[in-house]
Amino acid sequence: MSNRLTRAIHELGWLNAMLYLCDQALTRCTGGHCGIHKYQFVAQRLGDLPLCGQRGKDIEIRVLPNRQAIPPDYPRPAHVLDQRYAQGAISLAAYRNQDLIGFLWLLFDACQEDEVRARYRLVSPLSCWDFDVYVRPQDRLGWAFRRLWEEARCLLRARAVRWSCSRISAFNAASLAAHARIGTVPLGSATFLRCGKWQWMVATLAPHFHVSRHPASCPQLRFDTSALDTNPHLEPPCHHLSK
Image (tube, rainbow, N blue to C red; front, top):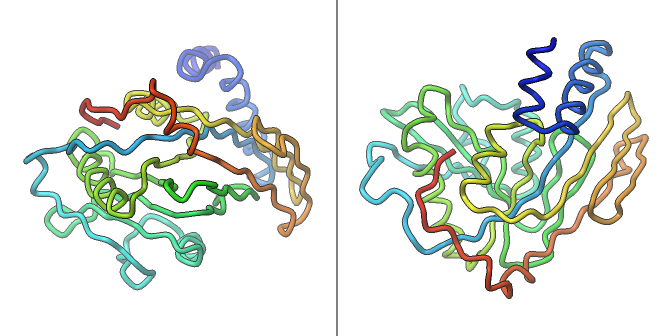
């Protein structure tokens, strides 16, 4: 336990480490009926420079525009996929030799959270959500992630999108570090405590506090990236992307 706590504190910091360990204990003791989720929200400016050049050309990127395009071995539950497409989301998938090796999802305007009862709404039409970025473990040191983001960047720039927003689990040290490396801008955070039908939220964004005891009761967090465009200190990242 001491080694686990030390590692968690080193990777996440004191507060997030404590919340993570409490979540693990609650999940284990209640069979998954209670748990803690903490999210960090960030924005990334979409630059003009290519991310891969001529590298990673053996990786094919396909758009999966609807449920019928999802392969049978896709590692996400059917009800989650149905919910995403019902919201108007699209997915980019990376293939090598016809094998699915990674994917990411894009959504415009609003996003319904998969894990808790919450809705995220974008105020600016020049922004979008990217979420559930996945690359299978044996390909995480290769070019799959960069090729996915290169295709996503081109698709979004064609729609005049300037900022891509993400929600990251505060308990995922690897994802937090990866987003820090690509030059993201913090937008806020939110912590959720679930216990049976009840849910409590504390957030740095309005409405700041919310209590819910049924699915129809859902806090909405609003994100406005328009002010970021007027900040001269926020330049688009031009170094190579890694995650």
